[in-house]
Image 1 (cartoon, rainbow, N blue to C red):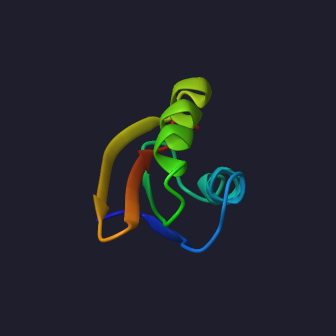
Image 2: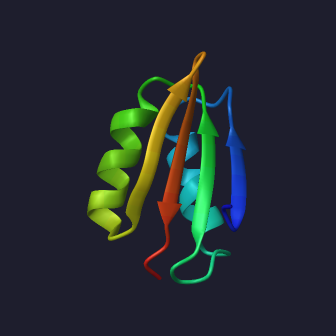
Length: 75
C-alpha cells in the first residue's frame, strides 16, 4: 500500500512529473508514492525522472489508458 497517491489523470507533460516531484517531498524516505496518469509520454518521463533523481521506480503498469507508477522515495 503506497504512502500517498497522486491523481495526475488528464494532465499532460510535464505536469505529472512536476506534481510527483512536489508530492514526493511529503513522502518519508523509503516510502512510496503511487501516481496515476493518462499521458502516454509519462511512461518514459517517469523512468527518466527516477533515474535522474535517485528515486526507485518500483512498479509501472497500464490498464485501459491509465498508467500507474509506484515510486520509492530516496530522500
